[in-house]
Length: 397
Ligand code: PLP
Ligand code: TYF
Image (cartoon, rainbow, N blue to C red; front, side, top):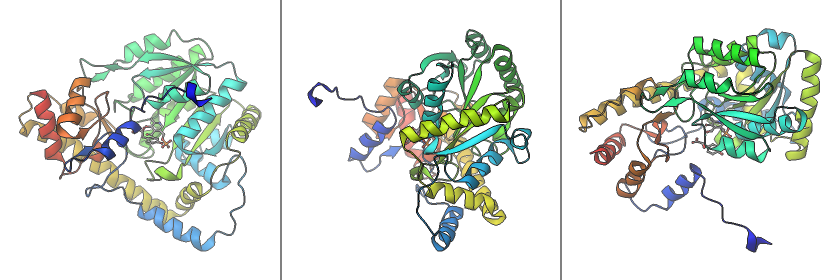
């Protein structure tokens, strides 16, 4: 049977890591995959996470199965981070949350639940969007449409085009919205634009599906939830898939959650029963460790403060690298204006480099970035910056 199987194309992002690992050059730099590195170029375990793990090691009594929805304390802590404590949605029990394996697993569960149980079978995603979105949604059977988002000429957003395209969406269609730190562009909606988006969804019966993978990497934990909270205050039904891979550095623990917000408590209960059924048919119940780490940290005032401090450190280091990147490009003789990079949010900078230039960076300079021109600023350090900028200057010359 396997003779007929076609070899899969390499993943546009993870395939780069494979190529990078196989590269024998010693001055190579990987700015492809979105993984946070500190000034020493390492991805260490957060201190808050280590301390939570010490507590767990001392107190955990059983490795028995979790329920399909995962750790209860974790799921309510997630709602607190998303909406803010005491939010109307929480008080009225309109939201129910299920722990899931990472943002990817959460998106997949959400998509499959929607596909099987609702009339929402088309999802609108931004052009461009995270390379895995189409893969996840197609696997669940959803049809995909794109809305315009990015304007190459200005290195900015084309909000009018976004609105114009979404006006063509039909009642019940899903709209994928990046909660903050849009991947790959780093360009987010403004407060006023979120209000327009909320009204558009409300007026046209569109259902927002939030992908929230970078809470705390933009401006702050609460600040980054602004868009979600604006939309949730006006649109009665929505879904959120969030991830703690980046903001807790829990990449390989695979920890995230899918949250369903309904107009009433009883509708939330019905929808959630089907979310659980979807989980049962996929992996039955989630692994516990990542959720216990997050809930231990969020339940302890001191640990929570330590986590917030560590998250701020990561965010501020990336911001510094953005500034240094723009400055170093200039000092390496690049005449094009790259100042737009300083105003982008999150881990990535959307450089505007062409496919050919990206290939040249890799082949001639061992600098790896994604084919779209997306550069992981989170992988830059003072040490590798000159190498990176010299290479970019060379391909732009
Ligand atoms: N969504 C976006 C936009 C992402 O960039 C990522 C990871 O890079 C994810 C979701 C999912 O992350 P994970 O499955 O590792 O939690
Ligand atoms: O860099 C990115 O955009 C992501 C990172 O299981 C990633 O693709 C890597 C592995 C994974 C999920 C996300």
